[in-house]
Length: 607
Picture 1 (cartoon, rainbow, N blue to C red):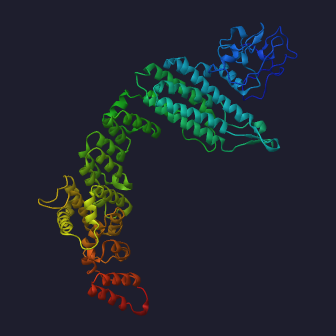
Picture 2 (picture 1 turned 180 degrees about the horizontal axis):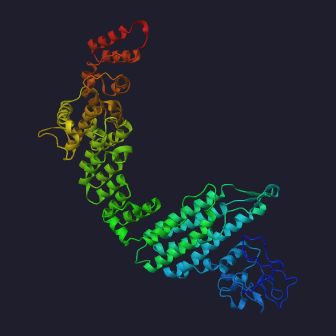
Picture 3 (picture 1 turned 30 degrees about the vertical axis):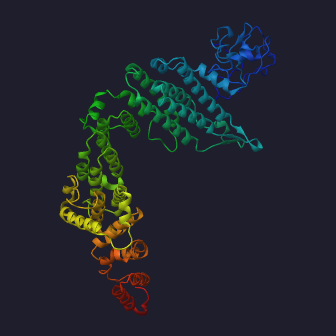
């Protein structure tokens, strides 16, 4: 390249703009006999063109319209390329004739063109990118350089204070990521995505987030203290897109040699990024872009990866990073490679997630036995999505049995309620949704239940008596249908079985379960829990029944339970409300019993 007078070597340097006359005026002090920028040519007038005419080739109509910048003298030099105008390949074709040093964009393009690793990426050639893809990669690289230039130049605010905001860089990167997502899900696929990633990542790693030392203590400059965190976050997000995009590649769209070139390119970028991250405060535990390198080196056909996907690998030392795991599972899901997704997730310890893959791989019969062997999978509602997956795949009975085990099975008697309640909720919601409108009406009728519901309760209690001692083993078999000749539906039978299991196996959750039934619009199920309790005098359950349930179902619906209640610890207000409800229902003798308990409290107030 020719050496222009006063031309800065890079955008981050302190050299400023060229020591020439402003664009559009004759070059003061510059000889036409020596090399000079086109914008300061003493012989050819220069007109500033505000549009960015460079990478995309836009604005060619201005060139053809006779702006005059395309004309040059024998010693005019391209500001972008640093070669004679007659030798510039982009002089009029992509607008280099309009370049000048007063516009940050042209400065960025100049840095790009004069930096070999930016303008001549070996990855683009290895991928076989066409001109359109190469131009887009170059455009995002230039935009990234421009963002850093604006960050370092800063924005002048009140009092002449210059604020150096890293948002200039973050905004460009965010826009690039949107383009990456669009390409990744579009027809151009991984190849175009990798080209954009190469361009924007290169621009990030060749620059520094660090403030200018000469300006750090200046009152005229304000540098943000969290810039390193923003720089690091950008690198981390770009690495995720690299990993995801590489995982989407195959030997059909990216040949093995290109993957090798990509790994080498990433090593170069990693080295540059490490120079910025190393020695940071707080220190970084991860070397940028190394996960992307590992995906390049261990493709889908790598022997180690094949053994993992086939479920034949037990060498835990080859477990991949979390970022890589997310990307690989995403690809396997999109390709519906469920068996391989199952083996990969199990190998990396995602047991709950592997259950959903097991269902999609037509192995629904293996789900419940696996959960029974590893009951920790039931914690934290991890199996609730699996229940939904089973229903979606047409295995509703398996879903109900899985939920029953997680809600009522032997997960350890000290299992906290929050581990069981999500499954109870799923069961109630699922089964109530199976009721038709006539069943809903019958089950919510005010007053005494009809004989059909009483028969369902009786049969459900008998079933629970038979299976409660060995529930885990019983649930391995399909749930039985209603007895022959029963007049109620399977949905009613199932609801009653859920209610009686709650009282039989998890009595401490009777109130939460009764509330779930009521909230889902099945007050009959809530009543069933009370009746199955056999008069257990749970103070909180009694209070909820009196205030919430009785107004909906009436005293007659739960009278057998009320008749067995004792009232120790029950507040005066609850007993008085219950006595009043019993009197209105014509149950005077029971009302008197409750009133007697109220009177027995004496003048001591509420117990």
